[in-house]
Each structure stands twice: as structure tokens, then as C-alpha cells.
Length: 174
Image 1: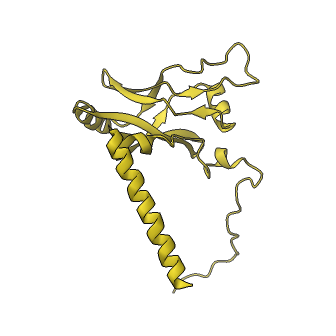
Image 2: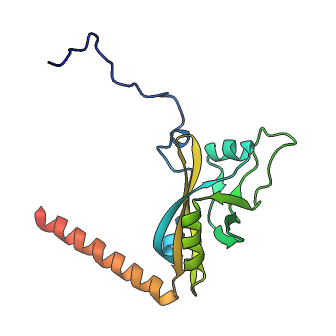
């Protein structure tokens, strides 16, 4: 026969209702919107990133930009280049450089997989978004192949056709 619990348990309350949604992990800190326009995103990976304290505070404030950033595999390590994280406005002499090269943290098996794939012609690593997960900053890297101009036009045509079809279905339901 099972024992009855002697006390009632309360559901876990939200940690801090006043906390910033970016810092809580509910909203992305930075998104590379142009990546899906310029590249075919084939496969996505999650990576940690080695940052200084002022960089984390600046990212919490939403002052990160991934527009021109890319990943590079060098000597068995992955690096993030050209990611712009603005200097922290309340930082002192220990403030960081905005465009410094940052190390990405991944498992060895994932790194070897990426080494093989990035050596193929035309494939590169593009960061698509930066976000918080359990209080740590993560970067979503996509293995990408560059689009030609006609690819971009084809994508735009397909998107327009899909939108018109959805609108026609909605009109017919009324």
C-alpha cells in the first residue's frame, strides 16, 4: 500500500518576474536575419562562447550584432570572427574590444564533424542567433552554402506565391 504524502507541495513559481526576457532566455539576444537570405542553412549546431564579464553584460543589454560574423575552424578549435559586441557603457579599464575574435566551445566530435564539412567547397559557418540558456550565452551556428542572385530571386518568388495562396484560401473561407 502506497503512503499518502503528509504535506501539499506548491508549484514552482517563476524565478523572477521582473527579470529581463533576454537574460531569462525567453528572447534571443541577437539574430542574424540576413543569413537565411544570403545562404542555404543546411545544418545547425549549438556552441558555447568564451566571453569576458563586460561582454555578457553588454549582450544582456541587447548590444550584440551578428550581421557580418562567421565561424572559422583553426587548429582543431572553432573561432567566431567579426561578431560585434558593443563595449559596456559602465565598464572601466577592463572593458572589451568590440570586434575581438572569440572562442566557441563545442564537443570534440562536433568539431571534427565540422572540420570535415567546412573543408568542402562552398560551405561555411554562419552564426544565426545568440541567446541565453541556463544563464550562459550560446551561439547557434549554421553550416551554410552561399546563394547566387538567381537563388535569392527564386526564394522570393516562392515566398510570394505561398503568401498569395494563403490569402486566397483565407478569402475563400469568408
